[in-house]
Length: 561
Image 1 (cartoon, rainbow, N blue to C red):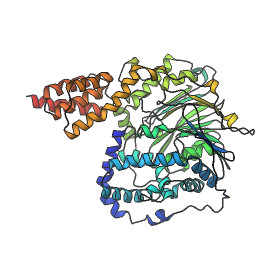
Image 2: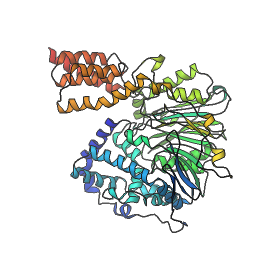
Image 3: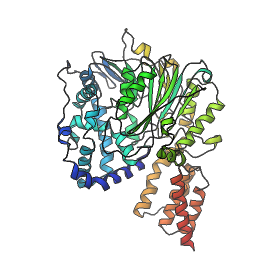
Image 4: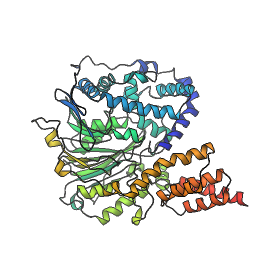
């Protein structure tokens, strides 16, 4: 779900295999379809939410509020079932909106009612073992949350099952498309690499399911009955963790790796990282938790630890497990390929390094760390916001070789020893970074929903967000679907329109490639040749992308003979 146009091949690929899978769907799925978690052991008070104003809601010590940077902040506490109910009752409108956005995307890509039925059959078959690989307390929490889901999508699956499936959506998309669905970048630095010597971690979560999905970002503060209080950044309806830190100073962030397609779903990676935050106090405990869970995709989990004043990358996949620990250095860089000994001979990983944009971003992080020797939170934010290529080359806005691909759902900066965290606000990671102090939020004194953040420590909005270049990029993004539609539906575009489109983002290869495809489709081969040649002078994202442009140029030259 890196970009909207990458979701389509995923569903096409599913549809191709669905007939076979649907025949198998009645075998072994009956138990999973009718499974309801056991929740009688948990005490429950059904929440009665008080609306304080349009953006603040409360139930006892649990509340939801929207800050001035437009981030939703949720604080919940209780046993697993109560956590789910409290979460659902407070975020019901937001959660149902997110669910609607997600499933409308699916409906848009699979408009046929027949194919939708096949897709539902496939999901039931593919997810048949997921509940066997999810902790019972998390199932109870999901059950409580699901009581506030919309009735609108009951035809897909019952509410509880649907919530379970949604927690595996990242993993399923990643597995089916057999590539890194999320082109994230993260890094950890300490000792001589930070101004105060403390551990500092930054990450971009480049997860994109459309602009609407990214509007309602949720910063959660969770005080479970058992385990360690923690915070995470995601979206309404999510109990898993993609970026988070606990009160002990353990941090987790996930980066997708190259994955082999598994035959069944197991433990969603976000629930593995949730378990690490809730129960680990140091790196060894985090490794032990990750090692005992069966996952169904390849993923790098960057774990930072205040207790160890160190960071490692736990590399998991369905049939392998490795831990990357740096030697004689105080920095760890993580993009979308594996680095541990366990994967040194992995051909899939080697090919990914050669053909994808992961290695390029890795080298860019190394370059920036050479330029900026001692980081602080503001300098870390500057790295996460960087849109240039190697040697400061202009590679076009939205290029996946950039650290800032301008599709990020969020960026986060952690200072584990100080228990401080900074969360970006819209647009992307360019808005103000809001600072939170977990020492205060999870103190015995309690808290009030008026100002959770440490506003004096906030990191200012990037001036680029208010520049003409950024406005041009946003217009470029809006126009791009028109070019694709014109190519697919034989619609006519003027030369002036295409020139304007390219001028909005002149250093990005894709604008020239799409213009070339348009001219090729309309048999204007001389113009197509010129555009493909221009595209090849730019920094093209991946080896397969470059080969695609070269293939079109070759076909064009053949037509001109």
